[in-house]
Picture 1 (spheres, rainbow, N blue to C red):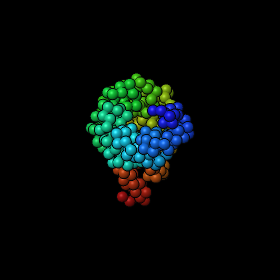
Picture 2: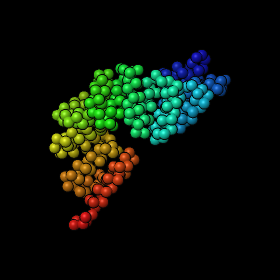
Picture 3: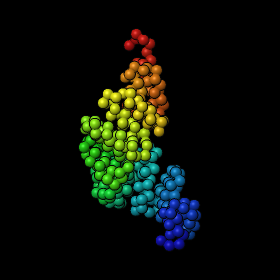
Picture 4: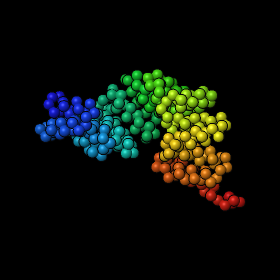
Length: 293
């Protein structure tokens, strides 16, 4: 790369987006079919959070150069973010055909496969990504999530331990570790791991959520309620924490507060359909006048 294209790429890598875009546009005036310039403009738009312009640019780049797998990979990420799972899977499969040994492509493909319920395929994609980039904590975490969806708790825990060797203060990985230990029935270890994560990691809602679930399993409902309230203070729209708190209050017989939290959960955009049906059914029961069934 030379001239404005080289200047644009260098500026992008230095996170100087205005300079990068200016140089890349100058290059495109002289070289309108430069797929690489269009691709880097897409990356700039993606960095700015401009999803639709980025999608158009990545599409254009892949049309100019069908071998540019990075454009397809990033396009797949944007499709996933928009909830367009089928489109994401399609372009990421194309990207993998072009670059079968790119761990980023494999990781993105694994995410798309998970969203489509292709758990075995996702595990295979993440395992290969980790083989190609073994010292990558996030990839080990992604693999663990795939195992967890299949309730393969020990395999997930093994992956998380490897990931935490690389990123020892990775808060989400610590939360997943607690969930795995609970899944294995190792409640005392899970409680210890949850408290460690809260003491040592950046505070996130997930670590209080998993702490609450372990406390509920150990019969400490009052402590669990406090943990769930802390989770919701950190992340008021956390659907899992809303539902867990509603069910905890419901089990305690606190009907008005349970109804309130069930209703908040139903208004949440990030809920699963099966949970929505179950919660609506429970709300109907709670709202029935006394003596009716």
